[in-house]
Image 1 (tube, one colour):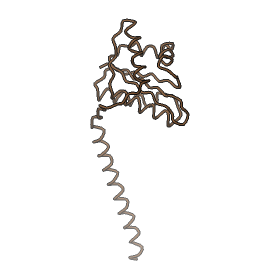
Image 2: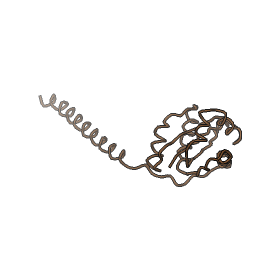
Image 3: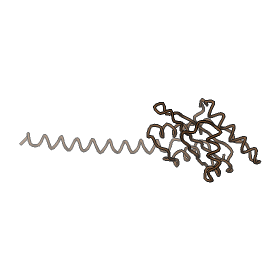
Image 4: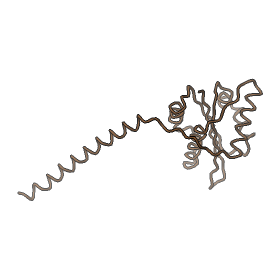
Amino acid sequence: MKLNLLPKIMLLSALFMLNSCASDNKESENLSSKVKPELVLNYTYNVSELETMDLINDYRVSIGLNRLEKINHISFKSEEHDIYMINNKVLNHYDFYARSENIMKVLGAKAVAENIAFNYHSAKSVLNAWLNSPKHRVNIVGNFTHFGLAIKEDSATGEKYYTNIFAKL
């Protein structure tokens, strides 16, 4: 009889331990969701990124709009999205909500928009493509004050991925 009771006690002990661990995880998740996301201060721009940002600002000024100030944090979030697209071999705005929420929380942005592109070979060509697309052009000429940009190349294919995020602070 004692031998039959031992497996039952062990099973009850295991269930108790699993339940208490799940409760601890929920408390940890709740605490981490209340922590403000961290500001990324450092971002190293490549020549193509700087050239594309300059062309965007030159275009905005040419039509009477303000220049946008670059923010490293926004470029870092753009880079994260490029890496996601490269790793998944996709071109999409997946998880834009999370990127925009992060920029709103960290920087206090009031509005956020995003342009993406794939496999353009120069800053001029990607800017022209965005300007010739009504939905992308709206973002470039929008009521924004700041922006970030990342251009990353897929090392396996040589194809370039672009993410350009605009914000109004």
